[in-house]
Image (cartoon, rainbow, N blue to C red):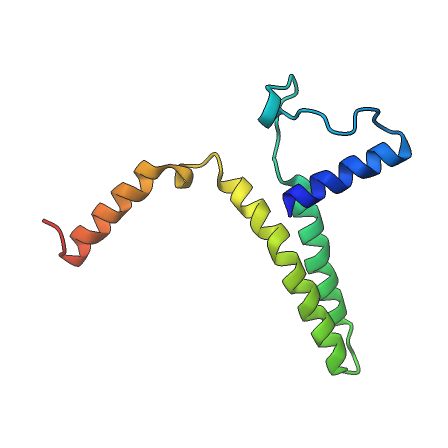
Length: 117
């Protein structure tokens, strides 16, 4: 989804004339000057808006129309890739992203289960 969003944003910027360079190097690919913040901020925004829309549709369904609940469920399902991209980006710099952490956790769990000595 992130690649789709990047391409769509570049096409939109090029079509309205905002940016003359259609595809420019980012800090990930080209050692850019700009500091990289949260890498999935737009995915988090879109996922949050979709989830909020699902909540609003579900809560304001006073007549309890079944189709509205299906639509809310569809919105919620559509928000999952965006929210998972944001969650993965949030975990990128943490110790959960390091192989050593998972290796030590496996050793600790195997000792706790009595598998390893």
